Structure formats: C-alpha cells, structure tokens
Amino acid sequence: MNAFSALFLWLLLNFSSQDIKAREASDNYLELRRYYLKWSSGPPGSASYFRKILYSHLVEMIGKEIKTDYDYTLWSFDGNTIEAKFACSQWLVLKGEISDRETLKKVQLGKNFEEKTKLLFSISGKIKRFRLSEYEGERKVFLILENIKTETFLLE
Image 1 (cartoon, one colour):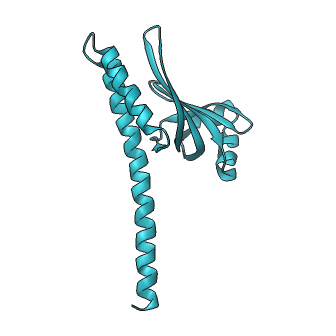
Image 2 (image 1 turned 135 degrees about the vertical axis):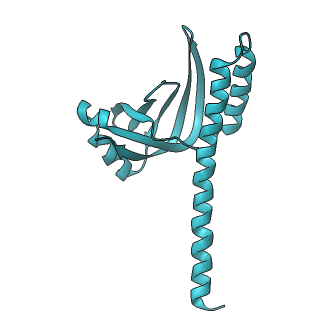
Image 3 (image 1 turned 45 degrees about the horizontal axis):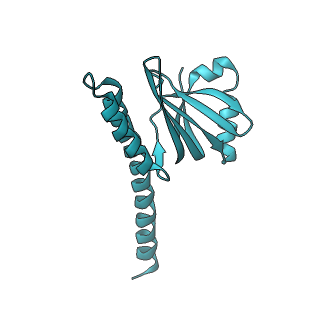
C-alpha cells in the first residue's frame, strides 16, 4: 500500500466516524422528542405511563451526546453559562457551560435583543443531568449539558 492509499483510508475512516457520531447525536435528540410527544399528547390517562418511559430513556442517555435542530434562541447568558429555549413550543430547556472560545464568541454576539431574535442555534453536548417538569399542565424537559457547542443560523 502506498502513502496516498494509506492517507485516503485514514481520512475516510476519520471523517466517517465523525459523521456517525453527529448522526447518533441527532438521532438521540429525535428519539427524545418522540418520547416527549408521547408523554405530552398521549391518550387520556396515559401520561404517568409515558412519563416513566421518558424518565427511563433519559437515565439511559446520561453521558451520551445530543444535537438539536436549529430551533433555539438564546434565552439568557451569564459568564460561561448558556441557557437556550425551544423557539416554538418550549418543551426542552438546555443549560450548561460553554468550553469552546469560538462558541462563546458566537453567543456573545447575540447579547442584544435584536440580534438575539435573529440568531437560531443548534446546540450539542453531552447529557449530564435532567429533570422532568409538569407545572399547570405544561410539560417540559430540562437537560444540563457538558461542553456545549453551538452552530448558528441568521434569520434575515
């Protein structure tokens, strides 16, 4: 095997493993959303059953990566902590510390309200803790993430 073949094989394996990890993180988000929808809008009388299933699923997801769609706006920002909130239905609240300086710069750009409403974020990180909330009929999932990374999309 020549050097070109070895380099090509290394690049192929390296990029495909990154793609697989990103796909798994997105799949984890979609699966979480599916379980949430069963809990929030299941048949009458089934909420406690689906809450237990969602809770069990979240316990299994601790330590796994999650990556959301571009549906989040910056909710609050304090030092190294970011809190993001789902732009439409607000079912999932994410909170955690940003470790990457580039991500921190992107978030600091959206501090004023006009910029804040124009930026949509896709948030990824490793699930550290979670909490399920049911207050006045409104059901939410709170996730505490480690090593938050964001990708931004600017609305025009």
